[in-house]
Image 1 (cartoon, rainbow over the protein chains, first blue to last red):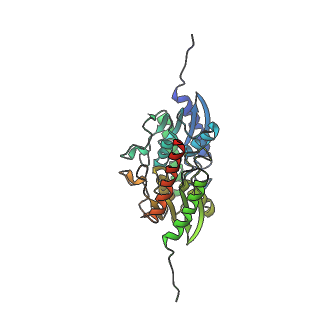
Image 2 (image 1 turned 90 degrees about the vertical axis):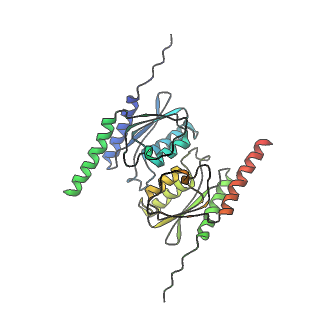
Image 3 (image 1 turned 60 degrees about the horizontal axis):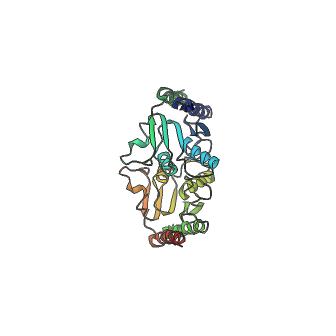
Length: 154
Length: 154
């Protein structure tokens, strides 16, 4: 008997959190993402907007580009993207074009999350799982801005 | 007496159209963009989604990245971006983060244009000028898809 065991989303979200920590260690807003295909991580990325002086260098954008390069094709319709923070409109727009099969995110982004839009931004075939490891994903962002505010007031 | 002469938008849209032609010559959907700062073009880009196998490689995304690299800063609040086709949601989301001063576009995109969204996607400070050289910008796209359909039916 062949058994297919599906990996729980937490395993891959943990890898995305590892990426978020790399961003934090560089002084970047701590957001991390991974792309998974056939239960393997094929791309890892973290926010690099400050390091690269590029407002488009969000974790998701880089993860999409890296996964496409790995696969040699621009569609991620057999992949899942895991990201610690709810994607913004730009990243959700990119995920639309990528036709990603599944989007899994951790914390909600109450200011800039794509779900604030009235229109559907993602592709109609994209499944969404939200609030996986929500507490940890929220905490890393919250602590980062708390530290930033402390630095400013010192 | 010092006279300040503002360049007409058509001059820079013509440069964006030149970029669109480069895309067409590579078999890409012909969209081109330039970023202008102090009346000088600081970045030129065209759609490369097929060449790079990357759905994020729209002309605007690359123009934003190139302009930010040139300026050494992630904000384009003293720049104008000229693009031959109305930006999609992803690109408008990127323009939001860039805080671009002015967006000028040629043809409307009735299927994927960001203005189809009910919410405002661009930054509240971004000025928009639309339908500059609309006829030429529309024609290059129309001819491209006409040729593609012909290729498929041959």
